Image (cartoon, rainbow, N blue to C red; front, side, top):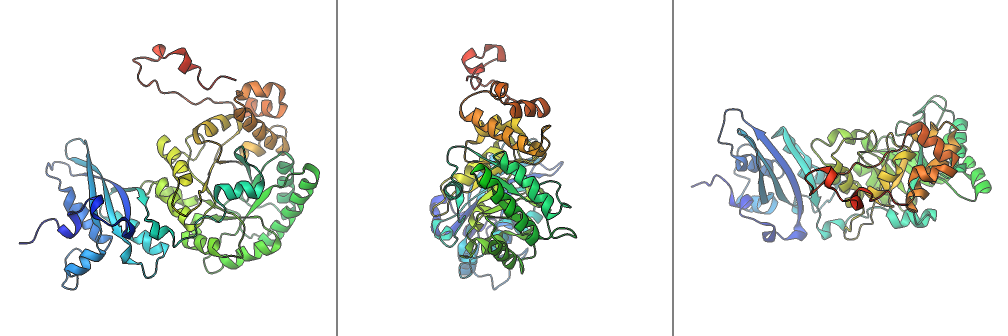
Length: 450
């Protein structure tokens, strides 16, 4: 008799798999069959498991019991979520064997196992999280700098970093770009980065732009005593990106910007190269389109294992609202959480950000973050230097438990910023109380004290 649900796939729990030999992937699955009361999720999951590993829609003789035992995924947990009629929802976990590619451990094959053809089997399948075995992470170098390395690299230890996004996205000459960076550097910006769209165009090549910006950074350093780190865009095809990165470092680059379309494998090559001894900042770009099927938590872990030092991700308090409040917070926590030998990755938030949002970012995410602003710095009514100063003043106010409007009373740059952009306090949820008016004053005032 052939079982409906193969024991080589289903007769497992977490305790039954050797954690050193499996990646544990958590999925959300939802299926709706209107008018159908009997929805067999295990049949669907068996198809998904086999598609992740050994199988096809029909079993062939070469897929022996030994092959399936060693190379197929294992269902280790299934948690059904209450659903309306004709719908079934569940969270389940698969243990996917590293034996599927352990003689050539590489990110493309890992991604094929976790996030390959599985999405053809359900319109509402989503990867929520991944857990790597220690034996696997030891095969990756991860971030070269990470949180502590960036602190040491910059000498900034006690606050978030402030980053200037160069705007417009493209079209400026090297000299115009350099002048913009000089002005924000004089205002105290810690970092500046090319926009993710920056490439070689008719009036601006990477080498010329980098050289001009480095001169401007040095000029600002001599006047202010502080050195801004410029992340120059090197995004290009995988067969040229390593040479482009090496050229940038040779010219004097102190940071590199790579956009997600270049791929995790390209980033892994950059991070592993001993000659590229500068931090890597990754812009997610079209990664945002993956969020309906792959959570930012999962993708940020893949970025970290690939060697990203700083990653931009979604936040509820800007224009990058591509995830829930909790996921927008959780990915930053996961980026910095212990992960065996890999250094913590520095989260970056931005997209429509301005100084009036600094308090929400910092109280929600802590101080180990980069806060990035383009228009929210360059659009300041009093100019680019004032825009950078306003950000630094907002950060100092929050660090010192002073409300931003209060701090702005004797900080003209910050005052102009909140008059222009606005100031926002984080909403509160009245948990455990029947109505907001019954919330103790102590809790209502929390976070508003100087």
